[in-house]
Amino acid sequence: MTAKVIAISNYKGGVGKTTLTANLGALLAKNNNRVLLIDLDGQASLSLSFVDHELLNELTNQSCVRIFSYRFLGEEINYNNFVFDKFKLNNTINNKSKNNFLSLIPSSFYLTHIDSELSAELAGVNSEQIQFNFFKIHNLLKNFISPLKDNFDYILLDCPPNFNIISKNAFIASDYILIPVKPDHLSVYGVCNLIKYIDDIVKDYNKFLQNSKDKFNIISPKLAGIICTMVQIIKERPIEAMAAQMNRLTNLGPSLRKDNISPDLFKYNNGPYLFDNYMRENNNLFFRAPMTGIPVVGQQDNANPVLNKVKNDFNQILDELLDQIK
Ligand SMILES: Nc1ncnc2c1ncn2[C@@H]1O[C@H](COP(=O)(O)OP(=O)(O)OP(=O)(O)O)[C@@H](O)[C@H]1O
Ligand SMILES: [Mg+2]
Image 1: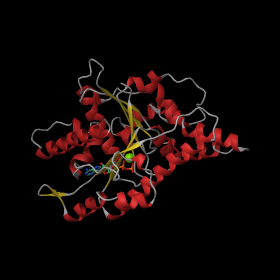
Image 2: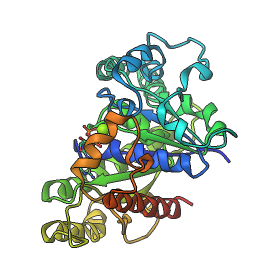
Image 3: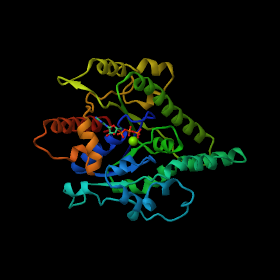
Image 4: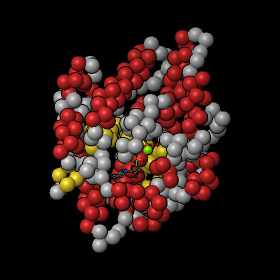
């Protein structure tokens, strides 16, 4: 099987993108999958959820800066050196057969400078050169991932909280896009803009391709769905204010149709799929997990009933995700 590439993205900050990526990745690996996580955010939160700061510094030379920086272009990539899997979580997974393990391409703080470097590279003296540079810059991640796809079942891309060239690379490289949303008024409002932005990227890329002599394929990533995060629960139900926002998310179709969003982006004609299951808020568990190097789904504590609930939520979220992307 060739890997399914899933981008976890929302330009809004702090909505749980990284937490979701870390936990889905760990759970997929526990369930006998070969999983690669790519940390595309210069904040390096995903990397720091698995390795400590000192180790991350040692890994700078094998960070995803290498995918994007012109300083390294043309250098031959030894993928074995690139992909890192010597972290604590893998000791808790029975990975003797190597059929199930989690690997990481870490980020580095230098990644925050890359966008301006790449923007400069997009310029050209004539339309042919502009087109050539457009495809070269926007396919950096897709081309990098391509030879890795046979080695993994799932590749998860943790996107930065903005619309930069790196996020564009992620959408272009992905088969599916998963959107985590905190169900509050402003975050829900931003979802339509995000979907419209993704739709514009896909349309622009494919349109550009029509006039191009370059041999790239059209892209057609699909939304895997919208998943609510940090949901406050009382008596096993979302609090009223959040439930109202979640309800708004069930009905984005009409507004997206007004914006002429391509229906190809969705699995269902009536718009994006909203996950039935959601990530509940639990400050204690989620705050502590990155410090231990093991995401919540990999933690053991039989005396903590909330942990079991949160782990069970993730099992159900994963089932729903796999159903959407099969
Ligand atoms: N379900 C949750 N309950 C409580 N806290 C959470 C939950 N999910 C994530 N958090 C915490 O919220 C903060 C932001 O989460 P996270 O880093 O996953 O968001 P993000 O969308 O990746 O942020 P950024 O946009 O900065 O990349 C972190 O401190 C994380 O531990
Ligand atoms: Mg993040």
